[in-house]
Amino acid sequence: MEDINREFESIEAVFQNDDIGATLEVLKKKADDGDAKSQFLVGHGTFMKFYMDNYGGNVRGIADEVNGEVISWMTKSANQGYTLAQLSLSEIYRDEDRCEEVDKVKGLMWAIIGTLNSSENNPINSYMEENGISDEEVKKAEVLAREWQSSNLK
Image (cartoon, rainbow, N blue to C red; front, side, top):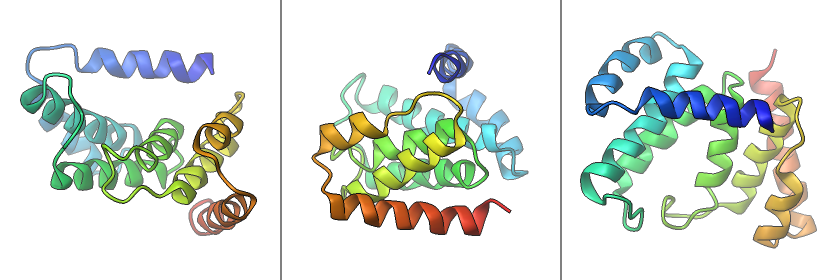
């Protein structure tokens, strides 16, 4: 988990300037060209900009259109195998303040994919414990994860 934490800290540093919007514009060019890390950064930065501009630290009630954009960019990145995007999606799909329709199964699917994609210890067990995932939900998430793998990792 140290590698992922170190990677996330370096990403946070990207947004330490006063103009997140300007940083996002630069990153969007690379993201539009298909760069997975830039896609993740645009998703993360879009959330951070909206969060800081509108709530100054309160995530509750975040606008659906912003969440849709964040999820879209994160999914593009995750579909290319970017682990931080996969693990971020697992968090988003279980957070009722960030996702209009909480989807624990989809959240677990992304946790599984992120874990399979990572060489480090994974958050699956804690995710299942924290969210009261049933055996049936685990099976559904595993099926979704396998389907994603067969469609996206060739």
